[in-house]
Length: 124
Image 1: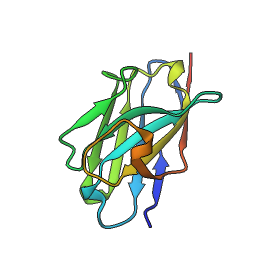
Image 2: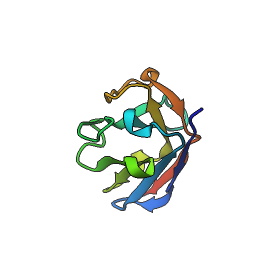
Image 3: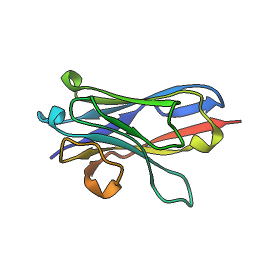
Image 4: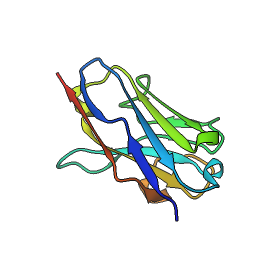
């Protein structure tokens, strides 16, 4: 059983920054790709960023490219989403997710374990 716990959400002003962390249980964290997704009220869940097992490959949604950075620390079983230049439209519940394979993808259906989410609110 894998457990994912997100932290770091909160309130930020437009143009500000937040750093989300996803702590994973289990001894095989380093073999799996990880992803971040978000969902706003009344909207479908959308892809934000993903990272391969080694961290060598990353994928970003166009809406966050150049502003968000995904990374991972396999020694600490942690995935990080650094969010800079935040916009009000980034307001959402942010989820981290684990993919059972090493390659990063953008499809939520590829991910089998999900955290509870952490709320990010950006004020204008």
